[in-house]
Amino acid sequence: MMVQRDVPRFHDVWDVVGLRGTNSDTYTIEDIFVPEEYSVCRDSDAERWIQGPLYQFTTSQLYSAGFAGVSLGIGRGLLDALVSLARGKTAAATTKPMRDSEVLQNGIAQNEAKLRSARAWLIEVLDEAYEVAATAGHITTRERAMIRLATTSAIHRAKEVAEWAYHEAGASAIMQSSPFERRMRDIHASAQQVHGRTAHLELCGQYFLGMNPSGRFF
Image (cartoon, rainbow, N blue to C red; front, side, top):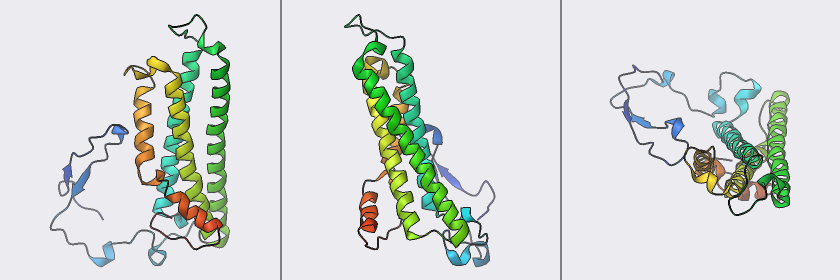
């Protein structure tokens, strides 16, 4: 609905450790009557005016894809920051440059593969779902399960990469002036919201076992 900008009363409640830049405050509106013809129920097939493939995706599916993308981006930022640090740093307790560490070399390669794999699969799943929506006119249960699994998995994989990169950066990561500290807070804030819940995996498992999963965020 649309109201005059002075009608909502905004509340400064976004006092968080990560994702501070979203400024996700809340608001209240009181004593406003909205006629039925000016109201709509999101994700209702009966009230969908535009039938294109994009509009067959539910709000939850779009939000989960968005959070997955944000998480992957944060993970990428931390991994790239570690690579940049390792190219020029020699730890205080040794004379061996970080880049010469076989352990670090192996870890960077594995986490690069993990991050790229999660991103590639997420894009594949979303592309397939869009194609199904375009041809069948709706999102099937299979696509709902795959979107939920790919988005939740991408958030978790990105968090794993981020935590590994943060740890390997050592004391350099804890400085507020470093490229690590804020991203570490952001990835945990992203993974804590509803689309990162591990409980989603149960619904996906139910689908693969031939059951009929249901839920607000499925």
